[in-house]
Length: 290
Image (cartoon, rainbow, N blue to C red; front, side, top):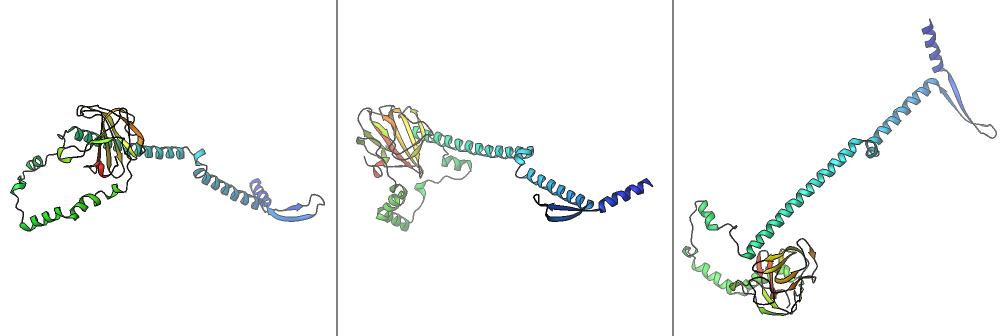
């Protein structure tokens, strides 16, 4: 009996209608009246609670995640660690390539070619026959065409202007004030120019670039090399003092060394200057004004 009575009492309370009246505080005039019941109040409260809960969950996973969600901070830290690891790996590979390039270049300058592959040896390893160039037969037509082409102006244009067109547009500073005592001569393996200058004359960088070698060699003494744009390398030998270290970016015209007489392959104070483009030596007088 008491249970039925309690149910009726609760039902009556939920069904009882109430009126919420809004009045003017000064004259108590009625402005608005809202009819409500207990069931409506409960329903509105539940809906409001659900909306607030959903909003809180949304904010905790998005805008407020960095402050309240430890998993978000951990995930962000993991992403940063992965990104840093990839950058470090890329830098390590780049450093290895640079070190290998510098080591190979040092061996070339010192005349050590033991680490380079011999084509004849490679053919022997592959069990392929060696053919001497003198035994190859060249037709009379090919010989005539080759002779005419090598003697024509077209050959000169192809080997100079077209091949080094990119360098023609570059401006080169004079590396040192002086006069050329020994010119470029590839046939005599003199792959640069020797410039005689005053004692303690500063040596300047010919173009913007990065120092890839700055050290002492037995033959050439204090040597510094710079990598410029377009696979161009400038070499400065027989210096008495070097001012720049490997990895330093140097502007054109900036002092990089002092002229000297260091190394075994020298017969007096001078600067031996070389230019290399795509692995080929150039005559510096074709591009630099001395």
